[in-house]
Length: 107
Image (tube, rainbow, N blue to C red):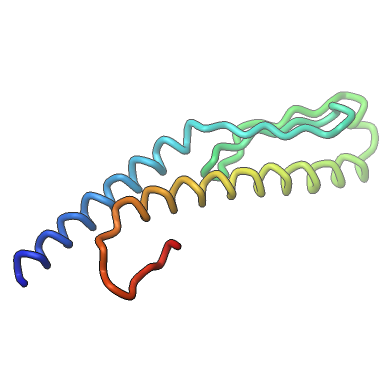
C-alpha cells in the first residue's frame, strides 16, 4: 500500500512538472484578434498576457469608438486564449492523474 502511495505521489509530481511546462509553452502561443474593419488588432498569449495593440490612425480620431473596439476585441481575444489555456492544461492534468476510484474529475 505504501508503495502504491509513493507511486501516486511520483505521478502527481510528474504531472505538476508537465503542467508547468505547458504553462511555459502557452506563453509562446499567440492569439490575434482584429475588428472586422481591420482598424484594431490585439495579440495575447494563451496565458492571457497582452503582447501588442495596433490601432489605425483613423480610429484615434474617435475616442468612444476606440474604447468600444478595445473592449470587444480584447474580450474576444481573452475568450479564445482562455479556451486554449484550459483545454491544454486539462489535457495534461487528465493524462497525468492516477486512477483513483471515484475520482473521475476530468470526464
